[in-house]
Amino acid sequence: MSDVELPSPDDSQRPAPATPAVEPSDWIAEVISSMSEPPTAEPTLRSTEEPSAEYEPVASVSSGSPAGMPGGAGTFAEMAGIAASIADREVVHYSARQIRRAREVLTRIYAIRRTVRFYPLDHPAVNEGVEQLSTSLRTYFDEGVDVQFAFYEGEVLLGEQLLAEESVLFDQLVRDMTSIGVGTLVVQRGVDNNELARAMALLALDAASVRKAGGIENMAAEAQLVHVRVGGVVALEQVEQQEGDPADAANAAFGSAVSIMREIDRLLHNGRHVGSDKIKGVVRSLVDNVITNRYAMLQLTGLKNYDEYTFYHSANVAILSLALGSLITNDNRFLSSLGVGALLHDIGKLTVDINILNKPGALSAEEWADVRQHPVGGAEMTALLPGVDKSAVVTILEHHMRWDGAGYPSRTPRRKQHLASRIVAVADSYDAMTSRRSYSAARVQDEAIALLAESADTSLDPVLVKLFIQMMGLYPPRSVVSLSGGEVAIVLAPNETDLLRPLVRVIATRAGDFIEPRDVALAEYPELSITGCLDPRTLNIEVEDYL
Ligand SMILES: [Fe+2]
Image (tube, rainbow, N blue to C red; front, side, top):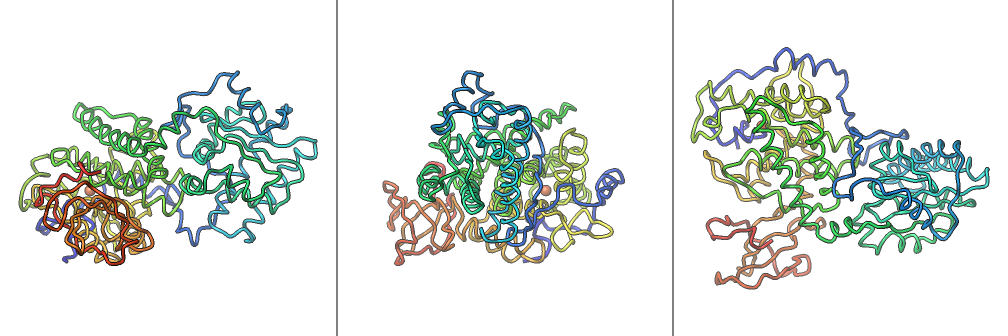
């Protein structure tokens, strides 16, 4: 394939006239180059990440409830009730000094949970983190009290004391605890570092793993934790409902992403801007859903709308980027910023003449220059929004720069794309290739995956392409495929251990007769294989009807 095709997917299908590269305006170049380091530190890949021992505050602290969570803190009576429900012990009344020290303990818990995700329990980094936590806990033990935390509706309590500031500062930790079903956490005198390390490893697990293992209380019992006790989440009916119906939650998050793009467009054409709080709220919901309902979200990313291409494309790119980003790090600050950059990556196109964007066939040199201005225009627009992280602005600016630096706008001196920009470039390329445009047909998914693979190390970051393909499989969710027996099926979820054998839903026989859909895990049927992707339109199949 030609070198111009990726990762400039909006240009990829068009013949490219020779035009000078668009340079960032002086103003935006100044903003970007004023940053000696990328504004949000890039997390490196998990295998090499040095976890920070320090607490990293989340990018945006919100006084509201996490998306999908019940609104607001409970009443005092409820809080007292929650506190009283801590295990079967009396609630400790902590002194003001002990309450102040809770922040240090939470900081240590936050840090050690990160560390145990990357290192085995006998690694020196884990030992060091556990020792730090142990030191903080000992200050309580030496005063004759255990440490009792409760997590409830976005708040954290020590004993019966609501920790208002810490609830905001540690909102990611509180949400993580809630998502794995930890309502109460008690660390008792007599705990040693080994038990503490095993307990922190349990608390570092994600919701899906905990669910699969039968719940956190079950896991704690199996791990024979004696001095660390976890209790279930109290009064979280709404959360359970959300977990019980991931497709609904995923649909709502996707819908909110499309809606906010519509609103941004409408306001923009009236000379106004949407508030960054609103954008961040949508992104927070996307992050939550991608982490808890990854496959439900990935199934949605094939949703297209020809007339509202940019809105749907933006939502798709945000979800794909977050799914890919969350394979690299769970750092909420990075993911939030990545989500904002991904959702708004093409915001600059909202001011480009729609007739140019939708023009079938080749563009004139002037039209081409207009289209290629959109990263700079989008970065300028976003930089004006108060509260938007600078790395999101950088992502918008850099999303067409390419891995090899040959894209646009050109930078002198050349600098490697920020990690978030490289992630968005992969997601952008995939979604654009699988979308129908006025000037090109949609590619089927396996063809798009093959093209991504071809672009690794030229236009796209090869490591990210590899991770993306591992995440999506060779036949991504929503692909309509033919099986070796002649049946037609729709891919539901990839199989991480065998990219060629996803979970599929068979919908038609070899003879072409539609049947009652049945799910088949191809991993369990070695005699069956996928022979290739089919174009659903030629088969008159509405994928949506079968999901
Ligand atoms: Fe773009």
